[in-house]
Length: 289
Image (cartoon, rainbow, N blue to C red):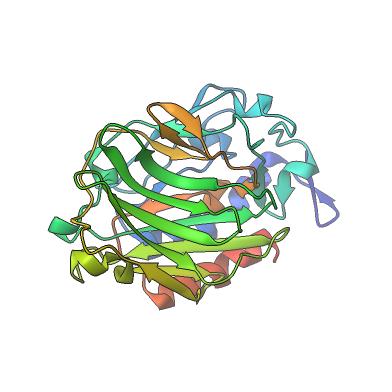
């Protein structure tokens, strides 16, 4: 039974408090929302299970099955134990990957691939408490760096800058957008990425990406490539917490992330600046920041 703001809560009480946060998330992301809502045991699965099933709200969305490198309750050095107050940030479950082995992934589905040739927009959202590691930390990706399976990756770079990369595996080219300054470490941040796929020439694809920090546009710069010809829909998994090269996981996340209705979210939608501001204004109340 965790203690939140000085009061002991039953887990089902907290779940009842999540309803407005789930509802707002669906309102902003719409029918294609796919969520990794770990910690919501009735809707996602037990913390000691090998897999969890993300929640969806419409047939046009996804209900992805996430497979963990090990049961979340066995992650070290901080096991995911919802009865402990240390695994909560206000109303949000806290999952702490170890930076060396912990990750989760879900099988390929055509809905995860977003290619510029079809102007297939998408947005991502994740809450993270950035740890200072001097190493690349993968947040969310559909990427294997070998064999034509690299599509996109949201990551924290070794200098703590936020980067969203898009990969053209046919021509072996990359375009990306990166924050101009390092992210603050040791505090909870809400990160949002939107990609207005195909609105610019592919040679300037990085210009179509917008990064948000805590509800406001994050100052960033695009790195474009004149030979970039767009992402190609592959068949590789979608992962949280690591990317891979030839099937070997690397660039592990060592920073805590939030779950439940505040968990990593994906949608085939272009969130507006107003919607990003809304998600921050609403969710910060549940996260207590």
